[in-house]
Length: 389
Image (tube, rainbow, N blue to C red):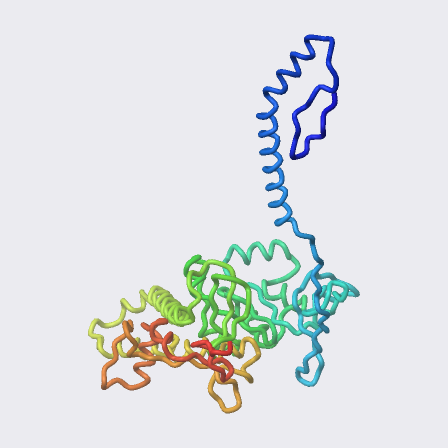
């Protein structure tokens, strides 16, 4: 017997010559009966296989290596009369020849261009924490017993410069504040985080009296420096719940009030015996007036808190020559505030002065007062977005 290859059309097998064996003739007869159904199944299977192959062929296209256009690395920028390259990332650090060095990934350059650079030649802001809580201070002094205080750990390792911004500083001593002033290092006051974590309070008034640079900060999202809309502040990962500078302004004033009340109570407790010996006929109004005068002299005013959020932040970042206020020659970073916006959280009356309206905005305002008008950064309107953006 001979059979054709199974290709469409498929013919029924046939007997080449008569057989002398009845069994063979019986098998051939049986095959002739069932072969039409076998052929139908084979054809159907072949069609299904062809359809599957077509589908696979449409999905599995030949891989083509993308052609990446060659891009020249960015040229250095001129800063203060010197050519400088932009740092994309600090990959590692080491001490070599008794000097701290950073392994730098340069922006726009490949891995083969990574290089070790002396830390003093990397003109970047150093961001870290200091004296946030008693437990933190205790742990630092345990790890570095040769140093007399927390600030000395940074200062002796040349990490306190005029490019350094340290968050918190709740428990800095007078000696440490003097080091901050002399080194030019700044403090980022993060009252929301300090209150949320019950870690402590920064005495801003005392730090300002020591002429230390201070800006307002929040702790919520990511470690970066934001310079936006005439407001500069530190954004860091930790325990705060708001990135709003309005919230930071309010919390800074509240912290100042809390510290004032604590000092007042301590003074009253220390002078309790002496006060009991005083005659009972005290002029209550004069006493209250004295307290109010002292209160106004020590608690941060809303103007001072607003300065911390604007020019204070710019001074902390050493960019106060660029932004921070509306002096002639500086970048125009501004919000246009509308105290009478729809659904505004504050009320404005016709007899109010602009200063009173501004104070109300700082205490009660929110994005409803600023989302409709334009927002300017470096003199360019960025909200609403320009058509060519």
